[in-house]
Length: 230
Ligand code: ADP
Ligand code: ADP
Image (tube, rainbow, N blue to C red; front, side, top):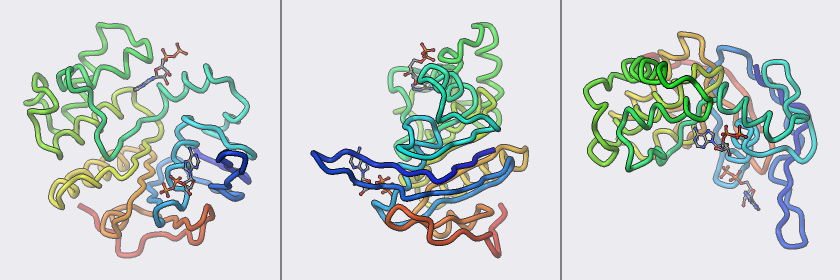
């Protein structure tokens, strides 16, 4: 599903170049459920931005579902991003002036899905996260855990191959965090490939594989033992 080969990412800082990722090679197969851990500044967000086609590697290749996406144009990458990748963020990133239903329909507007289908697919996604009773609410009228469930519905509405979640439980209490991990486990059981950045060992323990970063390098990559299954 995902293959990075010798990926380097450098940022220009004034006249200097800073190497945030140093020769990362990594394979994530379809159906995997992986967490990325590591201290602040170790390159996790940089990695997620590259995986999500939000940014490009300075050197190296990225194969997504067999295609070398590092060679594609920005337009081609936006097309793939809008249809094949679902994003979940720590701060939810819902649009405050739109209802829950409209927030979930938005990615289908970007992917140019016909208007008629949007409502039906959004309701399907909201049913999966147990939020059909909230469709007319606005983000400020629901809890943090519910906001993140809306964000997950938005992430899955285009039936992406991969979900990229950056600290999805970072703003949630432990009960809501568990609910979120339970939804991810269900989606993964249905075959969705999931990559989660987290600082919390408990959260990582719900996934199947832990990759640890430090100073832009992978320092360990291991299957989860004694995984928590909800
Ligand atoms: P993490 O997500 O693990 O906290 P990041 O990927 O955000 O790490 O950052 C890795 C390193 O790259 C850090 O030293 C950070 O300061 C640097 N960095 C990140 N983004 C930029 C940028 N746009 N310009 C310059 N340096 C950056
Ligand atoms: P194009 O006109 O090149 O086909 P789109 O109309 O698909 O591009 O997208 C326009 C812009 O909106 C792009 O920069 C894209 O990355 C951004 N975008 C697409 N989908 C989303 C989304 N779900 N949330 C936020 N921004 C998005």
